[in-house]
Length: 297
Image 1 (cartoon, rainbow, N blue to C red):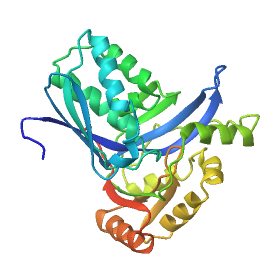
Image 2 (cartoon, rainbow, N blue to C red; image 1 turned 45 degrees about the vertical axis):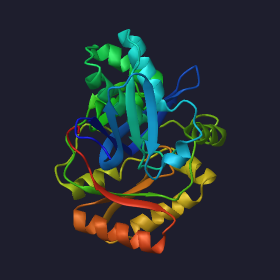
Image 3 (cartoon, helix red, strand yellow; image 1 turned 90 degrees about the vertical axis):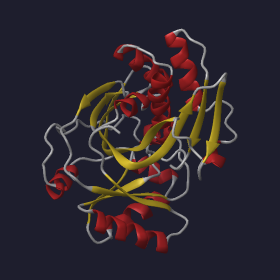
Image 4 (cartoon, rainbow, N blue to C red; image 1 turned 45 degrees about the horizontal axis):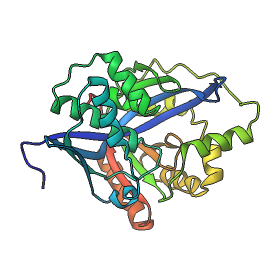
C-alpha cells in the first residue's frame, strides 16, 4: 500500500502516431521523424526517503523484469545522483503495468518518471541541459518521455519540438504478448533495405482540431518499421487488422518498433467497446482503452 506521504510519478505509455525513418548516421544510428503522443495508461512509481537506494518491483509486469540486475530506474537514479554530485538514497517502487519490450516506451517512461520523482525527492536544481544529457544517456526515448507531452521527435531522439495540441481522442492499445527488441527491428529493416529506403516526411506541424480530420491526415503518414516488425512477429499484422475492423476505429497502426499497435477512436464509449470485444476474442492479448493525453501529468 502506498503511503500518502510518498511522492508518486506516472509513467505514461508513449505512442508513436507516425514514425518515419529518414536517414542513417555514420555510426549506424537511424535518423527519425516521429509524432509522439502519450496515453492515459502507464506504470506508477512511488518514492520515499531512505538510507540507501532500493527498488521494489510490483504489478503484473514485475516478473518480466525480475531477472534484470540493473533496472533502468536504478540506472536513472545513479546517473542523476552523479550529475548532482550526491549519494543516491531512495526507496522506489516500480508498479509495472505496461508490457515489457512492447514499443510504447515503458522502460523509457519509467526512467523519465524516476528522474522527475528523484529530482523532487532530492530537491535538485539541475538545468534543462543537464537533465537532457542525463536522459539521453539512458536511451534515445528517455528525453521525449521526460518532455512528457505531444512532440515531434527528430534525429536519434535528441531533437524534440512541441507539437500542436492534439484533438480529444481515445486509443485502444493492443500487444500480442510477444516482446520485440528495437535493435532487432532496425537490423531487420536494414537487411531488407540495404540502401535504407529512406523517404522524406510530410509536415507534422499542422494538426486538425477534429479527431476525424486528424485521423485522415495521420493516415497520410506511416510507420516505416511496420514491415520489418511484422516479419519478426507476424501476429502484429493480425492485431492491426483486428483493430481496424472495430466499429468506430479511425486508424489502426503499429506504435514505435512494435509489437504494440493502436486504434484511434473519437470517444471513450467506442474505444471501451472495442477493447472489451478484443479482450473477449483474444484473451491472451494485452488490450486497454486510454485517452490521448494533452498536458504532462
